Length: 118
Image 1 (cartoon, rainbow, N blue to C red):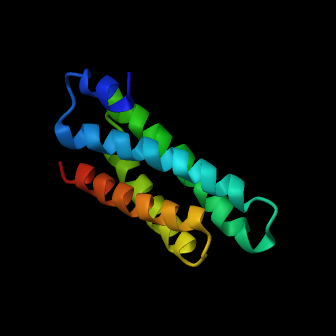
Image 2: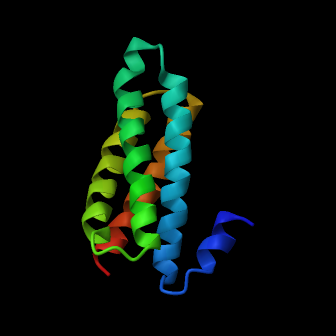
């Protein structure tokens, strides 16, 4: 069963929340990939560090949304901010993994910002 199929079975979620969970999980995966690719290169240390932060917070945010936590809004704000900062850092690098990561993180930040207004 795919993530989208699993998330679709959680009754209390809105379509926007389902989408945010999916993009947060995608952000987690792409950030783990990007951080791993950046390891060992001094010029990429900040990128790796920010990617690891986003992977952790995006994963936590998706789990909190899935369980309808009262803290989801606060995490949405933190996740959006972390995604934006990391996307800016990734955009500075020509590596494919950084460019893919930046694109996904921009989508994740937008989705999280939408969660803050609902």
